[in-house]
Amino acid sequence: MPRYKGQRIIKNRLRFYNFLREKRGVVTLRHYGTPMLNNPSVLQRASIAKTNHIWTYGDRYYNLAKQYYNTPTYWWVIAWWNARPTEGHIKPGDIIVIPLNLEEALEVLGSY
Image (cartoon, rainbow, N blue to C red):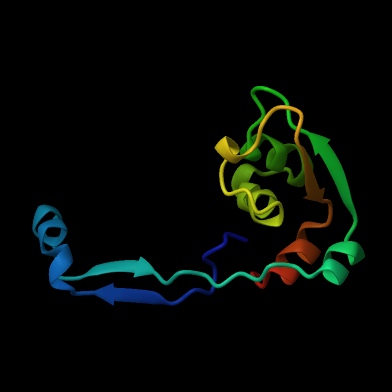
């Protein structure tokens, strides 16, 4: 399930986006509302099976998601779980935590 599933679609007519509407030849821009995700509590984190991964040069969230979840789509779960939004926030040798049960992790994050 993508992170935007179930999110409301906003019809944007703000003047700020006039240039973009003109460029695209449309009257209204449609985009998703921002999902509101939770930060898991210590108790929630403890209740979910997880594994540690030592970050090495060349690692990417999408590759880890493919390895652990069989799809790169859920790279953001690993990023959110570790409070490190991009690979640029991690140095080689850092330990990140990967929740093993994707459904449980999504439920705790409030995206399920």
